[in-house]
Image 1 (cartoon, rainbow, N blue to C red):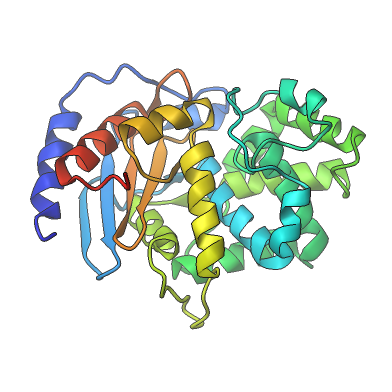
Image 2: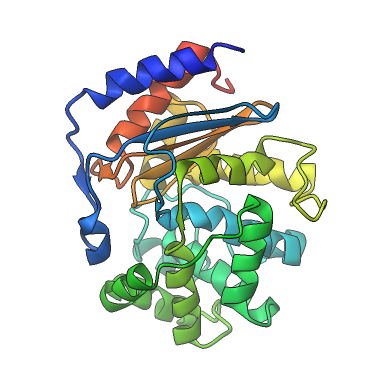
Length: 305
């Protein structure tokens, strides 16, 4: 569809001028310093179309969007055995809830809630020689961007205030589902969430979930078609915490949000789109980002349903 550009420009302009009833995430103090008026949208298609409006080159803290790539790397390394340690069910609870872990005996509901992502980080630590360095190199390879880095400020800010994540990690450890030292696992987890990227970088990075023929700069596929399909399925059912059903209902694409205000959404065999607006709704998802994507899939009739 050639008129993506006009449609995106129109919706961008409409949504930009709407009142934003969200609030910037402040429980990670460093995130509260971001200009709340930032708004960017970038679409990358599998036919190499690149369309962007607004703050598309400005880097921001991607937070939980990085959980797609920690999961991807763990899946590459562990294969189907991965699912022995973490489930694939929607949680229906807030992303940092401790409640379900008790009844599920330390096996997190899915890899995108904090508990699940912490277990994924534990798996990566067991497999990687230099976890932080190796993960960042994998990220650079998939994104074809050499200037990616962790934000020391954000990672330290999360470390100082991440009491619930510390509790989650220790709680899972008590069930035997964390194998490494709790401090090492948490350190790695906080750093993976601190990566900063722009909308343009994000939409290009996650094209591997839209394009069956995607290969990295080293000419290797990131995942098998079957694995990519499964990660898309988990994104559709679990990518937006306890608002995942709402996102599937309103937008109809697999996606993943982060409390930095970013959202990526994937249309298999067509495109990946990234939206960034820092003010979040009550469930921790970008208010304007959700609104933009709902209007975009309605206008382009490009929901997967």
